[in-house]
Length: 548
Image 1: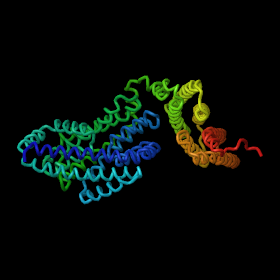
Image 2: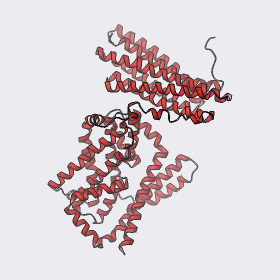
Image 3: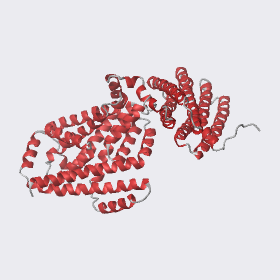
Image 4: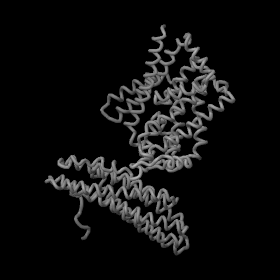
């Protein structure tokens, strides 16, 4: 077989590998992307949880780069800190390495089964099942591509050129490292690169001496991908990928230096060269995770100080605030109201971050986090001002009854959300600072009540925010019922708190803070519940008065 035919067959098999990997990732993102992002957003509480969340999300998406882009988006929106973001990416690197171990098992029998099941699922009418079919078929193609790579590379054993190249690289590990990094960058996938090297190694085409340099190079190139793809984003979005490059990249370079000095032979410890490739990959990322995790915080602070601040980062992206409020749509009320709705949703995102983080300020006071909450409140105020001006301009046109009602609903929601932001930043944040200054602490029962109340209000907030878009009648009824539930929670908590004070089981220093915080959360919940009233009123399911 001629060299050109061998190259075409190998290139086609590699192309199928890349395509299948992307096909699986696309199917997962379309079918479960929102769910995965939502779960991950609330799993990113600390470094260990963040690393675990990144690990499992990378397995689901078969890509640490996809996780890097998701985490960067969370960081830019203020949902996660830079420290947590770096930790999540270190976990994602190990997760993608674990994927290669799974895919290197002998799963050839599954190829026809996955393709048959994928085809059947894809031909259904359900969107979710169609995406499941895409995932299954993609997995079948991925396993098939690994078989084709092995078959296409087998004739290379008789090549006269390949041994010359490999002999040179055996003497120049730095070049081997650089070539592997370049391949990972070109593939935009460390998973595909490692699987290719493992397949070539299993056919004796990659010398055992090159296993470690190649694997380390792939990891270095894989770390760079996320940093390059986010280079044009705001500073907050760039810190986590750059931190990952600093930790993972430095770790791989340090490991290469050790290899140059001690010349480890991984093939001695494993049955096959392919197993050595995969396990070195897993081991390298495990070591980087364990060593790098404690330094994530200090590295994040260094990058925050080193990277120049841009206008978008300082003012929380005023340009982005106005992006949906297109002045040219003012004369088209339906489109203008759609623009305003999207802007209110952006306002909701910031409120959710504030509401989530303010409770952390009670438990773990942090000046930087408190300052960020205040900046988010300034952003909410800008949203409020810009949306009200935009809605006022829309009202200059003669609006149909439905459009006028929708405009009024959006205006009331905007005003209420701005009040929620003020309660968080002016009332609750002040109480958190007061608690810290007094050195006070909540009793165990009191903290449990406050935590339950906060989680209830946060869940209601998400339900209210969804109502702005879906206007679901059943969701609106559910939200309004929550007002009574929250009112009862506050009443019971106050009664229990007074009883604990009488029994000397609660601190007088935190007493007023406890009660006032419960009432702040109750007021926030009432403002959020009001978002459901227009939906119920339009359906004729809202009383005009509670009086008998």
